[in-house]
Length: 484
Image (cartoon, rainbow, N blue to C red):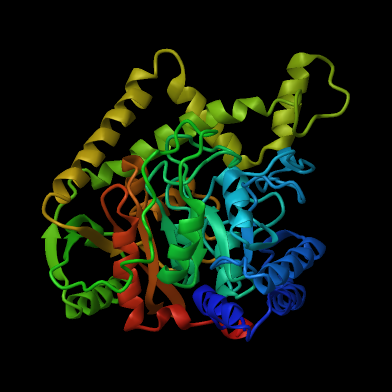
């Protein structure tokens, strides 16, 4: 059962050839038998999942089931849930159980999906390797001494190892797409505001966006359909109408103009990764697409701009965790300063502290104009580059990451080297554009991702291109040997 895609499982449920209870039980057994090696789940709600599966079967018998009813999913531990703790991978929230559900969780539950558990993640979504969790690193199912990517590495590892049919993730600088590439699955970051951030614990509010992670573009289309839409509880949520993301999955690619930025194929990109991506582009060309060389001249400024803006917003968002209202509180504080200092010092990990310090510095008097304001100006230049490019092309394509998954610990002592893993992904966040990663091959036994980016609110176009590509390739069908 676990070798089937979400869409295939949905068809089996609809035909009566499979029950939700049997499907969920199958995954719970796999989690118990195989999940320990990955450390990808922080919590599993077996009783709740069984109850929800039984209710889904009853709904189907009554003719009230939707397209996703009874399918199992895992949620990144950044989304608030009422039945399980929401820790954000941090000691700061070790015992926090939310009194309300995130809109994403609520919408997917209403659509009939069954929550299996919560996925491990880099602490407060800060990281590119899933080594920053207070609860230990997550292993990559393809080679367990490799990282799965971050910060949604737990979600990606769960889907790749077929421990759930799908998972939710969040993407602030590539945290859906990069782990999707490292683990050989499909993940989409929607347009900023397409999916509500209510109940999604904030890292960088102008960059964060939730999205689905699954085996295929078709699966992601089904999930995004349920996740997207205006939410009055989130002032940044877009009022734009939600199209049918599955309607044009099979549309012909003939005449589709795909821009290939020269900056994506420069120094820093592994030759084997480049070869896989170029082969994927050739497949799309064979499907009728037209490849056009383009330039994104400010691409080289994306990393510096991002790592000023994101920490600045993080320093503000994380100021609420002070040991007073909720979160970790130190024992026997001597005074209010001691309470703040020790609670935050004990509750936050090294990478979170690093980004808070960077952000506070960038926003401080005397440095705001020199750093934060300049970074916002660069952000506009990056956005303008995309606007200019999309005047001539329909989609932009290139590698998701410059390398395949690296060894655990290889970059732990070099934060700058770690940040460079986001080289090709942060620009979509800075511009608020939708972007997708789909598996396009292997290099030394590790997955490679093809990244696609489109104009705002054109997720359907990305899903169409990826679906047509997956219709003539089988990279998305590959399962790590230990989890087959």
